Image (cartoon, rainbow, N blue to C red; front, side, top):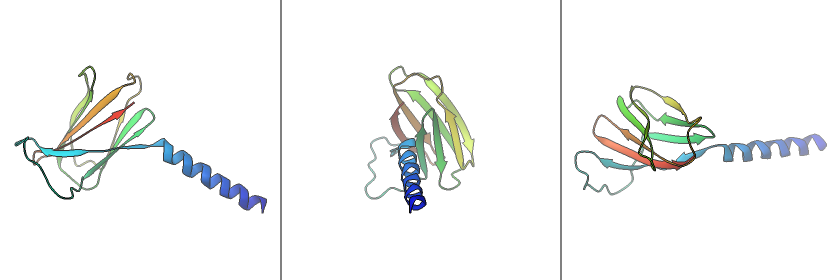
Length: 121
């Protein structure tokens, strides 16, 4: 009985710690060619991004091709990361040493579709 109780407690601690260890970044979508375009209906985002303590993880749900990624400090406008990646499944960006604040992430796909979101470090 004690072993079962201990196991149950351990599972709850692991579940709780994994739930607070990551925060998903919500994305919005648009087109770079026509900023006035409004998309109606359900949008399937081909990418998910998470904050883990001092790092940003970006997961791609399928092969998108060349994707441009920019990470910017929203207060200062300083670009912390800017790169074009091809056929990646997952990408990690270290935020170690960066000041606390609001950051913006923008992803630009080959078809000019953009995804952007923000998070607090």
